[in-house]
Length: 231
Image (cartoon, rainbow, N blue to C red):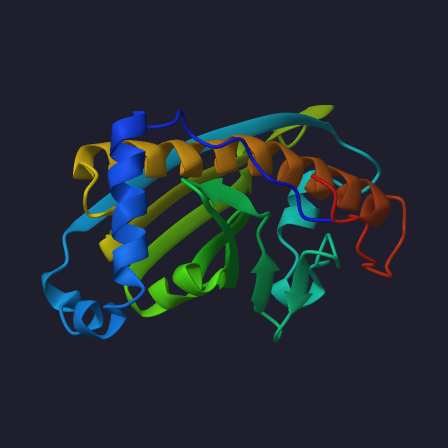
């Protein structure tokens, strides 16, 4: 059910061959490499994106929907999101490829109510995938802020603007098998992966939000998730 996103442009074959050779060598020296984690080179990826969509207001206004307390939020997509408590949610991001590795981030996020919307903040992130991927879970840090809001100056308009404004930042210890590659190349590829994730996920998130608003505004108080896990 998980979809793979397009990988960043490949590196030169010579660099990949050097990297592959290091991967083979590292399988017999993992203990020595783990003891040098603190001295491993780091890479930093930052991506920002703002996405907006026009929403036709129904009998119940969009501003009222955006002012709902987090305890009344729908999880939108039960295949991808589960509620932990009234304001905390666990999100299973789509699988994507980074170099030859398949990665599935699992995010724990908190929702804080704000005027005309909310702020979704990352509490923690866990990587699922191959043993090499999951070994990075204690070797990276990540932050994310997604502000979701409607335009309060358009409350009396037939259409309102709904916006999702997101910033993601990730810092990693470069895994030993990839230290033969230039840091700049790794950072460029990591940034492209994050940007592609935002390009795919933000429009889908807003589409689900609009669908949920339409159900709520028509009188459906079940808060039943309408998403199906599809990309």
